[in-house]
Length: 125
Image (cartoon, rainbow, N blue to C red):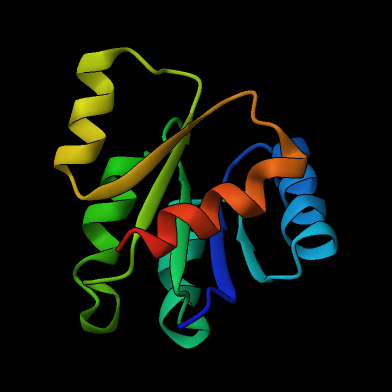
């Protein structure tokens, strides 16, 4: 099955805007853009994402807390998650992979390649 629907959770408005252009206008995905973990939890089940792109550093609920909460929703337990972060030390990278991430994208990311990168990670499932 081809990747079509992505949920992006990111508290930084400028990063959300760049990702939206990269994923909707350039790569042609249907995108749900959320500004917090709470917003993602409220909308995720109805949107039924095929992949979740998740910021690590967010206020209130960070990326790992958001992932754990999303995994409590039965329809989202197997949805692949890709973390996006500027914090990319090996120990932290391993924590994200151990938590179930299928990949990690380092910020700043290359907008023109974001869609292809997510497709490649999705296909590796």
